[in-house]
Image 1 (tube, rainbow, N blue to C red):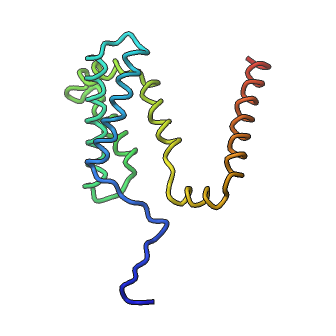
Image 2 (image 1 turned 90 degrees about the horizontal axis):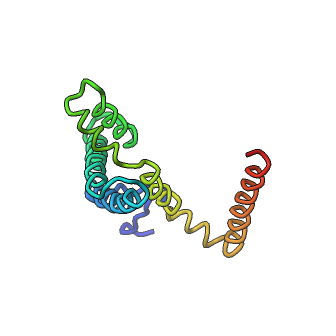
Image 3 (image 1 turned 180 degrees about the horizontal axis):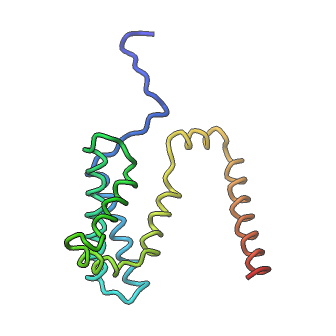
Length: 158
């Protein structure tokens, strides 16, 4: 092995910057805005303002994740920022709650869950390449069985 060769840790995750997070959340906000406008009686401007507030709270939480000396997951920081921003004695909390109430959180969850389902790591792609077509057959059978099983349970008990 020569001195010029370097090896990467295959388990190390690439850290995304705040700009990429901001852009990704902006794209999600656009998708949510469309869904929120179609699915509810809220106007486009009401949903837009609510999503801007949520985007800002998320960005504050992400900045805290980067700058605070003790490490907590970004989800924890974002949750803490949201909780603190909406406490009754926090200045401006009534305004924040007024704007955010126009965002339907079910339409907010849909693109987030879709992204979570599509987020595939490099290691998972390598495993899929090694497994070949068999893993696709198993995946289709598992999804079909889950759907049919859920439908059967719903028919019997609901």
